[in-house]
Amino acid sequence: MAIGDSFTAGAGIKPEVEGGRCGGQSERNYPHQLANAMNWDLTDLSCNGASLTKRQGGAGGFWDKAYGVEDPMIDSVTSDTDYVTFQLGGNDSGVSTEFLKCVTDGLPTGEPYNGRGLSNRLPGACQERNEANFTIHEAAAEIEKALREIHKRAPHAQVAVVGYPAVIPQDETKCQYDGSPIPLLSNQLGPMNHADLAWLRGKFEEFNVAIEGAVADVAEDPEFKVAYVDTYDAFKGHEPCQLPTPNRWIWPIPAPLLSEHAMWGAAHPNGYGHDELTKLVAAALPITGQ
Image (cartoon, rainbow, N blue to C red; front, side, top):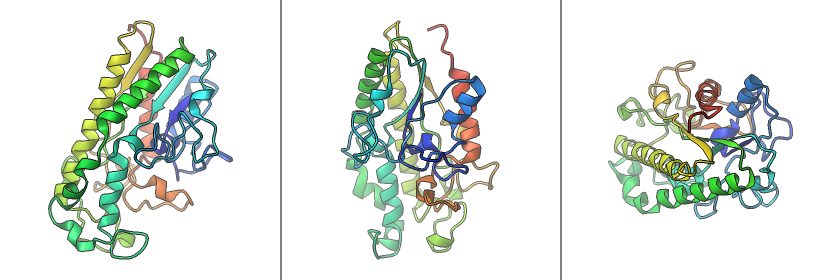
């Protein structure tokens, strides 16, 4: 069973699952690849925009109906569930929403953007406006709560909690935000200055540490087979602002996709990224020696 947001769903990657949950699930996402490799039956509950709460504007979906339509993910977890991959919280922590704000703030004035344009390229401009909007520790607490409920409903299930991959290069100066207008940019991360990119990279790293801490807390229960899957380090050197695919595992902004779900793909793992995620998660399951 796969529980996750757009990082799990693989939005925009062809071929897409016909009638997939929330639309935009890819047949090449890591849950599908993992199930095929392990010969497991798959229930893919991943959903673009899914969240544990709606405090950051996420669609919900874990405890309640995503977009008011899809049944709550947790309701699919039963005593018959054997394996779960869990990758949620990005839309609860502020990491995703504030990243998007920094991008849209740098676009030219006009709907649907905030239109701060070139003023957003002043060092630290986005950080100064949005630092207080992050809820990383609150999101980690929600992750812990969700994991405990999964264990309660499926006490024998093994759970791989998948961290979020590196999206911003370790050397942010590789991203040249002063290039062409954003519709023409290739392999970049939108109109953000280097100081803000470095700041946001730190937030991604902080969030992954918080996720790992939540997993460590629930793993104190010796009956709970749960493991954290670190994906961040493996993706270093494969972010946007690098050489194109197959070296690049994360789509740039904008994503060069011909799909109605392309907007969900920007700054998310591409097909090569999901190939790597499959390897990382497969190495964590089954969980032994805990």
